[in-house]
Length: 259
Image (cartoon, rainbow, N blue to C red):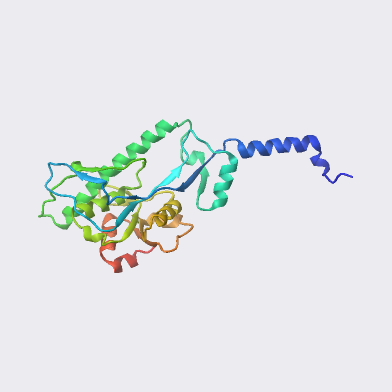
């Protein structure tokens, strides 16, 4: 006598198998956010125009901008990949609509991301210049924001703004801020130096730790989004560029800005 339940006789069972297969292998309405590469901005990323009197200073240590990898609008993942990403734990699964407007193409998404990156670099240069001018109003900088170029490839979005600003301060004024340390940074920045919230914080911390970072500077507003903390990574939560600079310069301030 068959032990198959009556509600799973052959026709319904075949139908159920087809539905399950479609659910696993058909494109799912979800996006997967994975840890992305960390880029050392203290390498050869910063250049300054020949018309400026300032020079790019040598620095010891590394200052990483962090990133995430997200499948683009033209590459929806099958359901089984989404399930595996969710089970892995180091990746986040979010509704497709949370990242992309209806009908958005990969080309349009890249255009938006590239524009956000360019705007972020402009704001970072202005924020760094404003901060340094406020420290020494009578001392000329020897550069202005339009003199600065930051070379970044295959990365977009606005979340590297704080990292750019700190890089400019270290490379053009105070290399001792880094002091041979491996520091990762994320956060949007405004021209007045305020630091804004970003997404994908868990994945950015994982990527930073894999790159060898021991310190991670992030927006204070983003602390509430953290669900896992990599071992060996000290978190410093800031609301302004000034707080980030002072935390790097003074360990006691850094300890007070825990997340």
